[in-house]
Image 1: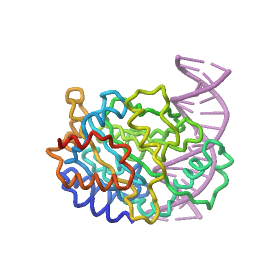
Image 2: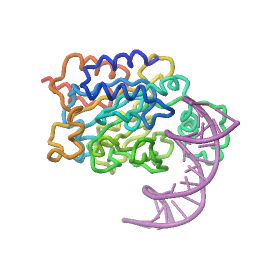
Image 3: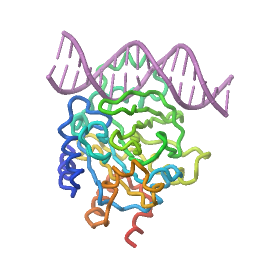
Image 4: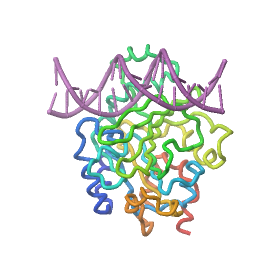
Length: 301
DNA sequence: CGACTTTGACCAGCGC
DNA sequence: GCGCTGGTCAAAGTCG
């Protein structure tokens, strides 16, 4: 299914680090590698400098972050999955790739969550045994930030936290507090670079951004999360997830410590046409078209 | 008092 | 079949 993309990933002009990361990620699919061990993912690691810094900035209005990345759909960033991951750049392990189509473990839980919404209680837990659930599209953002929970314009309620294998940092689970909104997100820190926060959004908001939010986030994020179901996860040959990083050109707070490790990954020289194509690809999937503000093109200009 | 966080327990999928 | 791990629930605690 997403093999195409996996392949694509391998072809990326990764840096040494990247390569190793990727390799590690793909070979380290022990069991549930980790938070980001789903299917193959499409990576646009370094070299991708498509967005204007404002893009990253809109993320949460603050300037904690210096980098930003996105993963779409079932893929997760093998933050912890890649023990050898030199930097937090994500790669994806195809461990759950197979699951992508059919969905596997988490699907069921999510199913109950996303489908039944907030109504399900322990009850739902007991039932829905054989019931399988399709996975919601996911967007993983890697953000360099001091705070774990980044402001993205929506209100979230934390409903769980788990220690992550291979990582000293726990993973937090959040759910959109808006009723009927099935969106969930996971937040964890890269064990490689503690300064990087990996946020994975799952599902799409079916409501507008709370008015109380920062204009930035609200304006920019709302659309993306509210986009209609555009990801035919199953059998579409789509990348279960893809992600890209956006270097934050602003001095992320004077060479933030963590930045060091990520410097490599966020260090790009130019935005080649290839990347543009890639971006287009993503956009075509309709996943980012809303997320990506019209500012990126100006990068060229 | 309502909203949110913390935290232990539970459940299911997967690999061995 | 067993153990590990990820994901979720829900009671209790905290905060404004």
